[in-house]
Each structure stands twice: as structure tokens, then as C-alpha cells.
Amino acid sequence: MEESNGVKQHILIVEDDGPLAAGLCRALQSGETGVSSCGNLKEADKRLKAQTGQCDLVLLDVNLPDGNGFDFLKKIKEEYGVSVIMLTANDMEMDIVTGLELGADDYITKPFSLAVLRARVATQLRRVREQAEAARQTRREQIIVMDEYRFDFERMEYYHKDEQVELSRTEQKLLRVLVDNRGISLTRERLLERIWSSEAEFVDENALSVTVKRLRDKLGAQDRIRTVYGVGYRFE
Image (cartoon, rainbow, N blue to C red; front, top):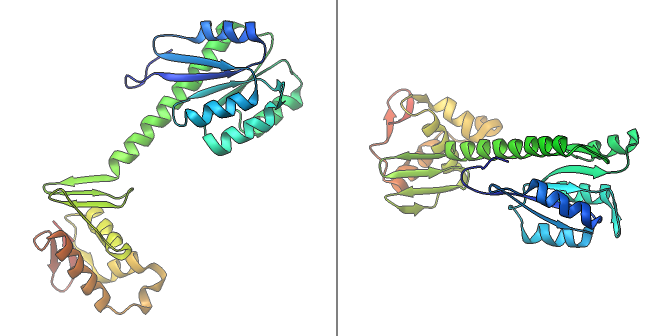
């Protein structure tokens, strides 16, 4: 198993066959991957709640003492968003189709090759890492840092000289459009359309001037948000 950004990935095995679960733990455990197991759905749910955001993959048996794995698969996907490999003796086509339709990421029937299982587990963990990295990249793209300014558009947090500034929704929309097009002169018509969308034709044009002034004052951005006479505004 590979490591992601120096952080261990974790696998939870939900299997009521004790010897099998112990063997899987030994086979999948590594310096980069932690593994734990439990034998029923109640304990599995308890662990997933306690490890929210820390479990990367669940190996889930279908037939468990206290319920049906398919029902729990649906709950995992809806509440925890964790990748799941179904691990079961049921090799009927309908069982496989049901598992995949409920959101299973893979399906392995018993008996199985340990080498194949490890390869499929590695594939799922790699996919989890790639998705996490894509999410981090998107998060980084949502944060704009310029001199004394830091704008976090995803969290709606805006800072000027390390002091947080509270902006209205309209001011946030205006700032986002200006920052996304920094260095470009935007017409008043385009700004009205982008900020007030379908309501633009009913909005008093003076509303844009008022919003620009308030944004400048709050951010101390008189030299940043420039008026382009006869055109509109530009963020330097």
C-alpha cells in the first residue's frame, strides 16, 4: 500500500468470520495502511462515526449477524461517503448488480485470491488519494492571496492585513467577479448582469456604484478597485 502526503490510510473490515478477518488484517496492514475489523453492523457504524473523515475504505460482508450488508452499504454512502468493497460468498449476478447499484466501488466473491484482493484494495485507496488531492487543489484555487489581502471564497472569509472583513452577499459576488478578472476592465452592464443575474434589468444602476464604494471602504481598496471612466471597473 502507498502513503498519501505522509498520512496513513485506514481500512475497516466488517466480517463476522473471525479467522478470515484476522487474516485480512495481517495481509493488508502495512507501514502506510492501518487496518481494523469488527464482526457486526452495530460496531461498524459506531467505529465509522468515531472515525469520521479518517476511514478510507470499508471491506463489507453481505451476510452479518445483525443485518444485511446491502442496507448498511447504502447508509455508508449516504452518511459517511467512504469507498466500499463488498466481500461475500454470494456470487449470484443479482447480488453483484444490487451491490454496485447501491454504490459499491467493487465486489469480490469468496473464495478469492489474496493477490487479487490486495490489488483491488490498492486501486481503491489510490482512487481515494487522487480524489483527496483534487479536492485540496480545488480548495487552494479558491484562496486568493495578494499582498495584504487574502480571499477565501469557499469559506466566505476575507482578510485585509490579517483582519477579517465582513462582506454582504452582493459585495462577495462583486469581489469574486473583479478578482477573477483582475487586470481586465469590466463594463457596468456586465457587472450588473453577473451580480444580479436575471434581476439586472430591474436593478437601479446606482446600486452598483454603492456596492463598489462599500467594498472599497471595507477592504481599503481604493487603489485596487479602479474606476474606468466611460466603461466600468477594474481590479488591479
